[in-house]
Structures are given as C-alpha cells and as structure tokens.
Image (cartoon, rainbow, N blue to C red; front, side):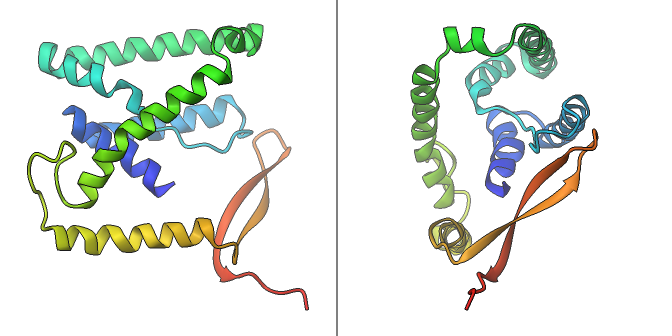
Length: 188
C-alpha cells in the first residue's frame, strides 16, 4: 500500500507538474465518499491514476494548471455517469466491450513501460534518467532495504496475514488484512 500511495499521490503529481497536496486531499475526500457510497463493503483507498500522466502533462504545458484541473473534474463527472450506468445495468455490458483478455495486457504494458522510471528513481536519477538528483549510493541505501523488506514480506511465507473482523456501516462484517511482523507460530 505504501508503494501504491507514494507513487499515486506524490510521484504522479510531481511528474505531471501538479501539487501533491491537492492529490493527497482529493484522494482522502474521494476515499471517504467511496466508503460512504459502498457502505464500507469494499476496503480500498483511492488515489490518482497513472493512466492520465500523458494527457495531464500535455494539458499543463498547453493550457496551464487551471484548465487541466477543470478537465480532470469533467473526467470525474464522466466516471460518475459510468458508475450510475453500472449500478443500473450491472457489469456485464462492460465485460462485453472490455473483457479481461483485453484489459489485462493493457495493464501489464503500462506497468512494464513504467519499470525504467522506477529503476532510474531508485538510482537517484529523474524518471527519464536525464539528471542525477541524489548520489547513487544514498539512493541505493534507501531503496535497496525497502525492496528487500518488500520481497521478504511477499516471498517468504513465514509472515502471517491475520484477518480482523469489524462491523461495517450496514452491520455486515467486513475483513481487513493486517500484516503481522511476528513469525508464524507453529501448531506443535
């Protein structure tokens, strides 16, 4: 979650020339609204989308920040209209036009095309690698332990994920997964 939140709320606004504070504030408001609308049934945190990097960069360079922010508001309204259609008709009409066989490879291509940006930033350079921001040794001293901790928590099954039950808004129990840093206890 930390990697997703940092990338979507700090990195994306910095890459596009927008203010990260606005991204943090609107992500919080959007998440609260989403939780109210879904009555807490979907434990998710909303953030900015990397799908809009190129249009936002073009918009800020061509028409400046206020016009770009207005365009993003219009996109939000269009999303709200689509969510209303999904509420009325269900998700079957989306799967008809955008089946998983289409959307999966698109998401993979986006992730793979952003991999060089992540490597450059882990080495202390700008996303395109044009200039050095931090000394490579300092950047590696920060990014390498974070990567190792992440890999250890994902690859090694000795860590446990406890499911905590809590009451949601509508009285139904919902689950929250909590990563425990204690090793898994044996049953013997």
